[in-house]
Amino acid sequence: MAKDPGRVLIFDTTLRDGEQSPGASLNLEEKLAIAQQLARLGVDVIEAGFPFASQGDFAAVHRIAELVGGGEGPIICGLARASSADIQACAKAIEPAINKRIHTFIATSDIHLEHKLKKSRQEVLDIVPEMVQYARSLVDDVEFSCEDAGRSDPEFLYQVIELAISAGAGTINIPDTVGYTTPTEFGGLINGINKNVSNINEAILSVHGHNDLGLAVANFLEAVKNGARQLECTINGIGERAGNAALEELVMGLHVRRRYFNPYFGRDADSPTPLTAVRTEEITKTSRLVSNLTGMVVQPNKAIVGANAFAHESGIHQDGVLKNRLTYEIVDARTVGLNDNRISLGKLSGRSAVRARLEELGYDLSREDLNEAFTRFKDLADRKRDITDRDLEAIVSEQVQQPEARFQLSLVQVSCGSALRPTATVTLADQQGHEDTSVAIGTGPVDAVCRALKQLVDEPNELIEFSVKSVTEGIDAMGEVTIRLRRDGQIYSGHSADTDIVVAAAQAYVNALNRLVSALGHKSIHPQRDDVELNSRPSI
Ligand code: KIV
Ligand code: ZN
Image 1 (tube, protein in one colour):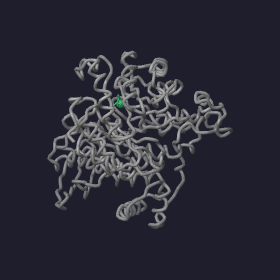
Image 2 (cartoon, helix red, strand yellow; image 1 turned 90 degrees about the vertical axis):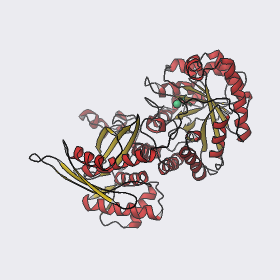
Image 3 (tube, rainbow, N blue to C red; image 1 turned 135 degrees about the vertical axis):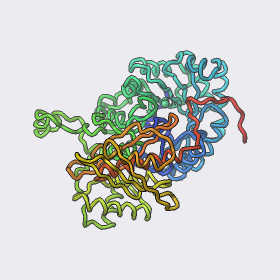
Image 4 (cartoon, helix red, strand yellow; image 1 turned 30 degrees about the vertical axis):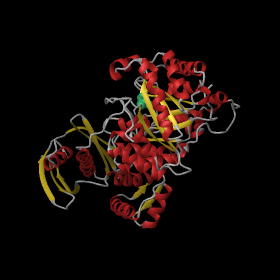
C-alpha cells in the first residue's frame, strides 16, 4: 500500500487548474487574496500556478511563496512539464516558501503519446526518471503525475510510476484528465497501482480528475477507499471544461460520512478525528471569494455552496425542519460558515467597527484599502439600511479586482421607461485622469451602458455573458453583476455589486475591459496544450 498520512491531504489547484477555466484568469492581487484564504481554509498544498507560462504567472507564484509559504502555512507547489526549463522556472518561483513542491508531469496514454507528444513509450520511460531526479536536485518534495492516467495502459503506468518513485518522487498523482472513468474503474486503477508497483509504499498516492461526466467527486471517494491519500481539487469545482472535483463536496462528503470512511483509514467507525485538516467554517467564504474574483457564478443548486443548498422551500420540508432539522438536513449550515443572515452594521457604524468586522471575516486590509472600503461602505449605508457580512464581502472582493485599473468609471447616467428609448451617458477616466464621455441608445438600460462604454475603448470585443443576482434578500439588496467579454477566443470576466444594477453592470463591464486590456500582449503558455521540447537541457 502507498504511504498513509492517516488522513486525506487536500491539494488545492484553484489557482492553477481552476484558473485554466475560460475567462477565470486572475491578476496578482486576486491570486494573493485567494491563496491567503486557502491558507485560512487549511488546505495542505496550494498549487499556485504554472511558472513557465509567462512572467505574470512566475511573479504570482513567487509572491504567493513569499507571503503564504511561511513555516506553519501550506506547501506551495508549482506545476512544470517534464522539461528542465519548466522545472527550473518552477524551482525559482517557489524558492521563497519554507515548504515547497515541484509538480512535474508527462502524459502516459497512447493517444497523448501518439498525437500530442509524438513520443514512444520508451522515450517517456527515459524522460521520467531524468526529470524527476532533476527536480529532486532542486527541492526535496517532488510530485509526479501521469497525465491521462485514466486512459493509460495500466501495465505501462506501473512501469512509469515505479521509475518516478525510484528517482525520488514522494507523491504520485493519477489524473483522470478527461473525466472518462467511472467510480469502480477509478477505484480499481488505484487498487491496481497499490498491488503492482513494487515501491509504492515509498510515496503518497494522489488523485486528480475532471468532471466531464459529473463523476469526479464520486471517483475520488472510491479512490480514497482504495488507498489514495491526497485529493487534487478546486473551490466550486472550477477548472478546464466541466471543471475539477469540487473541494467543498469532497471535504463535506468525508466529514458528514466519517463513520462510513473511517474504517478505510484503520479507525473505529465512531472515531471523531477529522479526515481532512480543512476548517469547514471557512468554506462558504472561500467559495464566494473565488466566485467573485473569477466571475464563475456558482449554480444555485450546487452542493454545499449553492444559494439553495440549505434553503427549504416546500411546506412539508419546512415543517419537518422546524420540528427537527435532521428530518431533511444532513449538514448544519453553520458547519460551512453560512451564518450571514446576521445584520452586522449600519449607517452610524464607524471605521473601527467596519475594520473589526472585516477582520472577523478574514480580511486583513492595508490602511489605504481600509479607507477605500470604508468610503464604499458609507456610500452603501446611505442607500441600504442594514449592511450584512455578504455586502461587506462584495465590497472588498471588488476592490481586490481592480488594483491596476487602466480605466475608471467616473459617471453613469441612464434614462429609460415605457415611453423612452433607453439612453446612457458614461464617462471614463484613464490613468492620467483624462476623461472622455459617450452617449448611446440600447434595447434596455444595460445594453445602452455597454454600448456607450464600448464606444470609448478602442478594443474590439464581444459581450458573451451578462448575469445578475442579488447579494442578499430585500428590495434594497445589492445586485451582483458578472460580465464576460470575448476577444480572439479568450474570455475576460468582470464583476461588480451595487444597489443600482445599472451602475453594477457598468462597473463590471469596465472591470472586464481592464482585464482584457492588461492581458493584451501577455501571451501565456498552456501547460497541457502548448508544444514543448520535453527533454531540453537546463540553461543554468
Ligand atoms: O488534468 C490533468 O491531467 C492535469 C495534470 C497537469 C495534473 O491537470
Ligand atoms: Zn487537470
